[in-house]
Length: 161
Image (tube, rainbow, N blue to C red; front, side):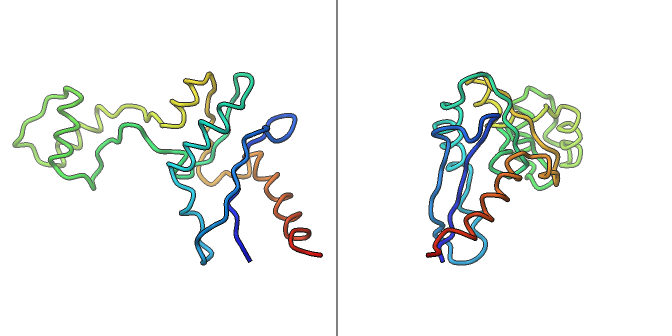
């Protein structure tokens, strides 16, 4: 049995016309989530969702990785010393080459900007805003209710004669 990846968005009157994206999963195992990635999502987001919204809208998103890609990544403890120094240099934050990695990370923490999400910035260019749900609170996402109904309908009707 084929598995399909479905992206869509709704508003007060139902699904947004032209915003559907449906494609067959190429993965044979149960983990098909890797097929929806930043590239696929951003293409759909710009050319099928944002282009089809008729008025300024608030777009509700969960914290899926492809929804939450940060434009300018801030160094972390996993970053190497050279990349931390490069980040500080690009931000015109003074540091010494003799500083330890932990000291450099302290400078990063003191100067850490608010995250700018790629999707949010794109939505703003089209006159919309993104509302991000807190992690593990998908119950507040209206589309989850619709997906439940849709999945039940497909299970009961699609492919049955």
